[in-house]
Image 1: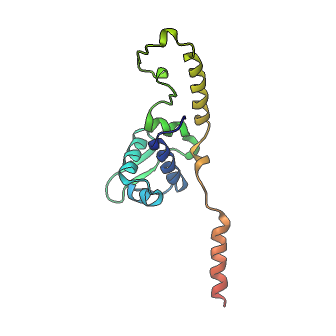
Image 2: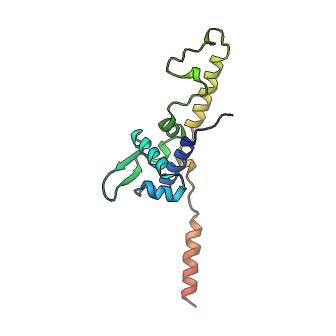
Image 3: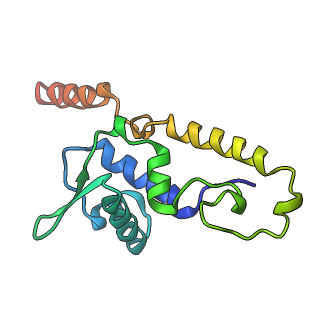
Length: 153
């Protein structure tokens, strides 16, 4: 089974919440309340996103985190790499020397590279903006209309 780490999965969720309200400052506590992701995990991920320059960190009273780039400019690959490092399906694809005992006889390594690149390209072609759920415009209008009707009674 190929799957994202929990940290990468949570990072996409947290970044989606922030991207849904890009003009606001978001604290770890408020994001924890919105997502139910454990507070220490939220803090850890927000720090990683800031170090990767995906978020701006505003320190001090009234501080928090805000988008450093528009959601259209951030890809899912950017988020995953900020948390987990390079997208890598097998250990032999690491940029680090792995000293694999099977390398001299391995016939599949170059095939894994092709697959890894395809997975990376797929993740890199999905912008964060596509992960953001926007509230429906008519919901707010319906609520406003209901208030107006009730006041006229």
